Image (cartoon, rainbow, N blue to C red; front, side, top):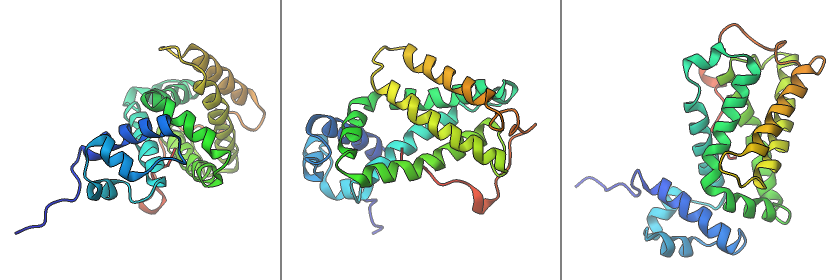
Length: 215
């Protein structure tokens, strides 16, 4: 008899929602997989199949947000100015994180005492920006592309702080902050988005495709 799969396709979605809810309610340091199993009704072995360690929760959260972001990268997106492309992509990512905002707040608070959270998020944020630039059709391998990448990383950090305190449904403060920050780096000498722009999206080679980010 063939072995049964240890997790179901919908386990990851369900467990992510329950895990972020548990983190919001109990905090990162009080989180346990046994509590997640009881809360979700998913057996502990299937919890392990989805989340073999606590930081796998961060990877799944980041992956879900980036899938939503990249789903917004429709062909018409490349016909827009670079600033508008980046705005659409980054806002789509934040929209996807809205259901988990209370849990994200708890993670940000826990990062002050758990440097592994901050380190994991920082390392994977760089890969997220690589995906953003790729989807937006921006060249990222030149010195100017690298400068734009670093600037976008700072933008994401600053906008994320505003997003955490922006509880309005349409996120007006977040959108205003993102628009302002993108306009700033577009004007900055040497870091202009136009300088790193390509006429068509870059095609990454198989071994150069950025890995799925954590957050």
